[in-house]
Image (cartoon, rainbow over all chains, first blue to last red; front, side, top):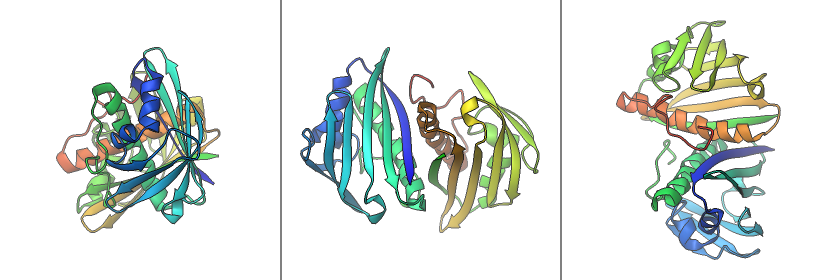
Length: 148
Length: 148
């Protein structure tokens, strides 16, 4: 098994603002992909994330407001099957610290390398959304390679 | 054991340009940290990377021009001891693809989450250096959290 891990610090005194950006459709559409539909604020909700080349359906499997959000892939690319994504939040002085984990990849394939870098880019978009009011969700995201 | 993996694509027809940015002091100082000293173009060379808060001495342990660079940590923070860093390059149409691995972390500690995100930022700086002539090495690097 292989995992993608990240840590960002968002200059904010409100863990709830970050939690809202992870559990509401407007929030998620503001940093990950503009084409986000469904519902994400209760366990068992399904969120549909769509990108130019495809997308992911995520099932919300754990929530602990305002400090934890956990999704499991419901539908998506084969490499993501069986993986879990979690966002853990905590306040450290003037920062909301976000620990991100995309766990349980079967193999450290080349697509996993790509997704690791791309998650960093999208988490920086989340940081920007909270700090400045404006993120860079798909299709406005920073491109990292020939896959996107 | 835990690993950090990344993938970037640099718009360039020259793998050698990227290889030079990974094996020369001027190149490395252009994207990772401005304060880089030593030598990095032969096996057993030691490169000293210094940042505001400390630094790393890397020993070059494998080179295969222009497609592979491997370092081992010679001296640095305890969490990095025993870890290996590799850069694999290949040409795919108009992109030089870089697969990055920072392997063999003993534990997936919070500092590893930080380093994972920070490596993405620095690899994007390398991409910018080659594509535009200008990277953002420390101390001009994009800050991601309350640790840097």
